[in-house]
Amino acid sequence: MDERTLLLQQWGSCLDEEDWFPPLEKVLEDITLEQAIWKPDEGAMNSIWELVCHLLFYEKRFLLRFLGETANEPQAENNESTFRLPTETLENWKETKQEYFYVHRELEKILAKSEYEDLYRQIPGEDNSLVLELKSLALHDAYHIGQIVFLSKMQGAWPGKRSF
Image (tube, rainbow, N blue to C red):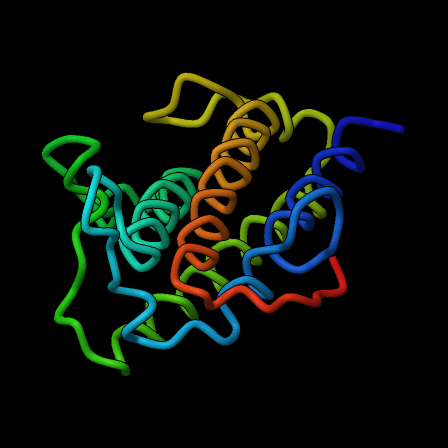
């Protein structure tokens, strides 16, 4: 199996293909606005929506850098500010999810079309090539998907029976 095929499998597992952990699209499908903004009383944890904003920030920034559109890339003072929410409305929650799904799929399309040279080309503004950055982002997604599942379970929003 070549690097691109392996990475496409990992990338798909993060969004919409069932594997060792549930894909984010399925995890978020029934999450309400109230569940998305909920935080436990104890401990410093981010909400589900904050985690999705964080994932979106890094994937969108990488996509725009890959496309050479650095003037449009999202900005953050530090990592903590990547968790910042827009105005808490149902419409904005839906838009955040849809934008994340769109950006993730756009990166998947780029990966699927990339030739070997493209996979290892240095991306302006990044420390790594396409293949290494997407590998890192897939691991980052998997880590935060686990947190989102945990927050769902803490709220009783995780169904007892799932296909994964």
